[in-house]
Length: 371
Ligand code: ADP
Ligand code: MG
Image (cartoon, rainbow, N blue to C red; front, side, top):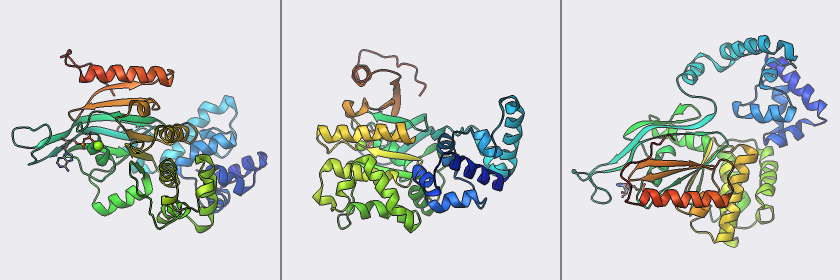
């Protein structure tokens, strides 16, 4: 793998598009410096940027790795060569092994046989010894760019599950992998660092810091991630336009509406380019108009920026914006629904039917679920 050759290729393709380094940087929402470093062969783009970079430059991944355009007749031969190169020189042997053992690059999140037992408590669905199995042997995967909802009645284990994925709580059993990394055995300090770098949060009452302006709230997230000073303002500005909050950047959180606050929380969550955004009842405190705007924002982020979102909600309207719903009851995932090509309205009706079926008592055999 020839980093200098790849850099020269990026530079050539960028110029062919008529873009400056800053223009390319802006499109990728990264610093100018990063682009300059790639082009002079001093560094390689981050893994998460390969696909958007290839899309922008109109090259294939193979071509990017090879550092040249590949003629169709040489595709097979070149592809193998490039793949070997990537494996041996770049991904490193360790990483490659962990990918082969079940992790595909596509899945941002993999939850495998996860359970959480709270011991010695006297509430909820009790077992004999006063403990609560809040999450019971749950497995599912979430591919990059999808918008997945978790539904279930109060007490069904949604928040517990989300906290396990958020590294806030530890499962009693099972594995949780985010971008291939098992987060379950991480010491607390590493977990905190992991949260900052890889996760974004949007909660119902997500506390933006009241003494900072909206702009400063978003900038704080970038500063924590050690993003260069020069790139903070352009990054926030371009994102704010997309989220329609440019006009309120200099206001304080208490000066703006609930919906605007939530879109700011969104901006703060995605500005650091997290692997996944975790949202717990994010529309819970919003009026229906603001809720709809937030959901449209989520859907846009997934569609246009391949952001991955996992949202807990008990609101069927909110859920019908998702691509996929997992239904929880008594700590288990009892069913899953995919939106496919349906309209929101049809999906809404399907979700209602599914909830009725899950909560109903007329069935004693559960559908075989393969989430
Ligand atoms: P949901 O978010 O779906 O309402 P939770 O995940 O909050 O459900 O709760 C699932 C079950 O676990 C409930 O029975 C709840 O009482 C219990 N539970 C949640 N958190 C704790 C905790 N920290 N200690 C003991 N039991 C808990
Ligand atoms: Mg909850």
